[in-house]
Amino acid sequence: MERIDNIIKHTLFVENLNQNMAWEAERRFCRHDLAHFLDVARIARIINLEERLGIEEELLYAAALLHDLGRHLQYSDGISHEKAGAALASKILPDCGFDRKETEAVVEAIISHRGQEAEERNRAGVKGQNLANVLYRADKAGRPCFLCPARQDCHWGEEQKNLVLRY
Image 1: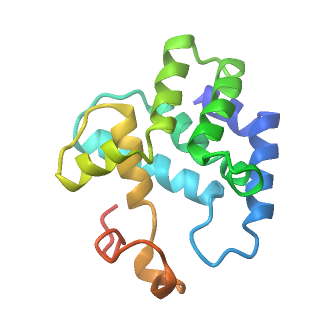
Image 2 (image 1 turned 90 degrees about the vertical axis):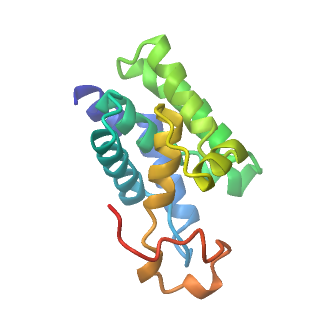
């Protein structure tokens, strides 16, 4: 996965990941760090394999690594992190060997990973066969709420929390 290695070495990726870590150093709740990004990537890969969706592995990893990269800009500038992440992805991906079509797919997945439509589809049990839906599901499944010391104070409703290990 040479292109994925290019992402994690890219200056913009490293700088923004470090900004996320600085802004969330004292955060009690889920952090938007490399561990989260890799959890999402690996869960997305499992979903892709279990459901035989055929999504290219590098697209799964690219979307997962970049989906929350702009979180610090939400804290500092009030820019939604999905829009900030999409903007960063559109700069990083071409530098790392992704073509226009691949970049557009990843950017769309990042933009829609928190959307109302994705939430409604998930609640209805609809399993989409596209990158955006897989990213959304993997992101939600990537939180170990059953172990979280801040669980009682979390803004997620009990029905949203991951109280059992699925992946």
